[in-house]
Length: 244
Image (cartoon, rainbow, N blue to C red; front, side):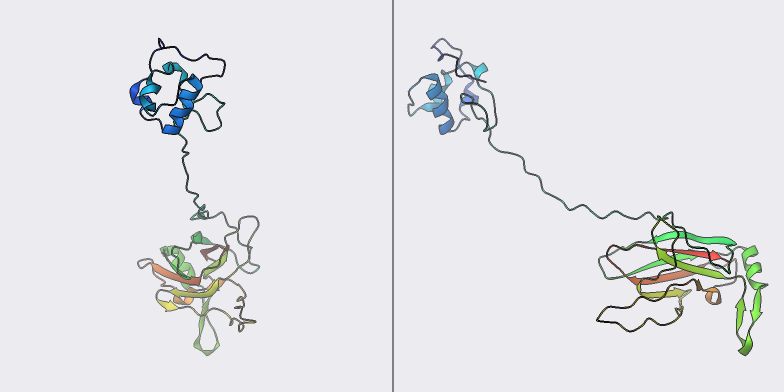
């Protein structure tokens, strides 16, 4: 960098490279020649070649001290991108609250995130699980006939939904506009959601869902669960299926 204490270059000073000086702008050459004590002639590029030693010209930012020569005054620009929301894990470390009257015999589908996969308001996910011959046998021998010809099972296939929150054991919790199908048949959710209040849809009280009546009690044919729901900003849910 050329400092103010350097005397003006004499005619014997080695010339600057011509290709460097020819790239200067007129205003830059005027500064260069003025500092070297030369007249600012019209043919600035030619005069500038013989003005200063080549070692005295270095690129600097616009804030450089007087005597430096500006070679480039442009700054790179960067586009700011909005960070994407974090993607929840496929199998979050969710713990559900224990149920007082049920013991877990097997985990058929471990807690799995219900991740939004499109920009649409309504989302849907599909799950498949299969029963082993031993599990089928346990369910079948637990069959109990109820009044009116209905039947129930004391060993059940239970579906549970909750918030994908890992800080503490979670209670059963349903999404808005929830719809569940088991092997293509609509599963009736317990109770009815209260009517909207002040235009806000009320939450349905959460509880475990006994889907045994729609499950294929066979080890040869898998079972399919379809879950549809309305996405909620800032809330992620998890589903799991147990033999209880």
